[in-house]
Length: 241
Image (cartoon, rainbow, N blue to C red; front, side):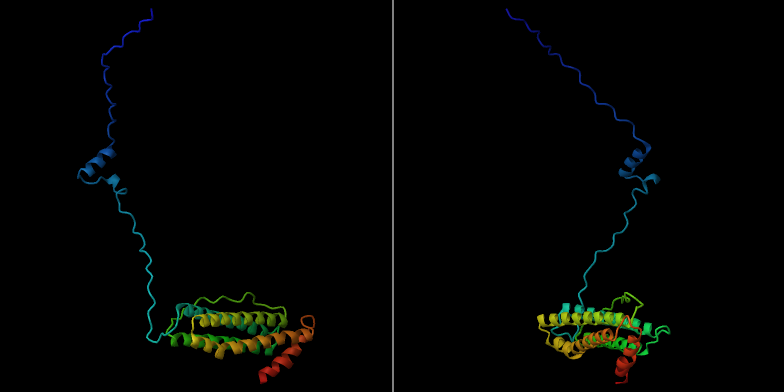
């Protein structure tokens, strides 16, 4: 015979009562009173204070349309403003070179006069572009002009080489603007740049390159007389003409 298993008791086990919640703290009681419609207590005022105002979202304002604007794209307008900055920066650099050679310890007056004239030319170019911007119905947007990377030059040859690099940079920027005008079919801007800027800037690059070659043939920068001879014979003749 098998083992007799004991019968399970069908008596109902007593249910366990849930644990009582702990008493509310004064802060919680004040919060419940406030939620029921009562006044807010003092200790809750900082918590219930409204959040700070967020800044208003940026709204892009369309550019005002000028009555004289015709076939003038926005990217051409922006590139023209950049060219104005380039011309002003070049004028700033040439001005720094001019007054460096005007110092008593340099005493190269024709160097100073040459670079001072170039500074004025670049300044006039910037003003010409500003007038063009107004004539085409654009808006002039000036930027902060960066100063020259250096304020002293070891020799006139180094100054001429720096001026040559600056002139090439200005000319390349003009070519980029001319290319953009060609791509946008802006015949007026393209012809204006060729007539008033590109020809003059190409000639300036040639003159500066020739000056660098002449200084090297005279023995610069090792020869101390090279700069004086070039200042008197070459730049002096250009100043008189």
